[in-house]
Image (cartoon, rainbow, N blue to C red; front, side, top):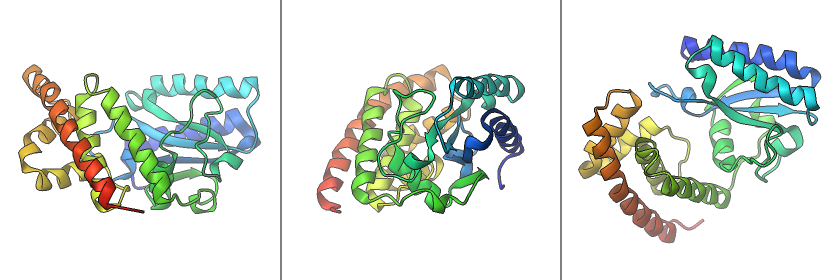
Length: 246
């Protein structure tokens, strides 16, 4: 697994704990997202899908939560940032956004995007069969709907997470421009810096924030700049929506 040692050690312990907790119901464990891209230097979480053949009972629902608490203590800081979904095998093979088996009120709203990343090879298969045997390739209609969901999330969180929103807007612009959603925040930021030189300083500040190198003045500049960038991105995406037909 081509991954940083601290991520590899966390993933190894995660799989061992899941096998102990879930036994024969455990069908697959797949990590996707930022940690699977070689250009990613700083990441705040480890995204995953845990696939089960049957719903967990009460003890099996409690065990993964206890495992997460243990991994948070043993593998700081990423151990506390395991961020993913426990889903049924039957749901993993479908196109409908699957619900979280531990928190049924939560669904994987970016299901189409996650499938696109996994099927493109941006995945660490920690346990179970090859992902191509499980996941259905998403259509552009599904992808566009998921991208709209990502944009809605950004719109609601501009004030709370300005650096995240700047980088995710870069990724959304890249995805709509190129019809390629399998990209990292880092790669999308590099692309956007070239295409949008007047936004380069704001993008650099967002990257600097992820590296934990920003000053209070930098953070204020991010908070001020993200609103205008968001307005530009929405206008550009709406234009691309009209010209990039399925």
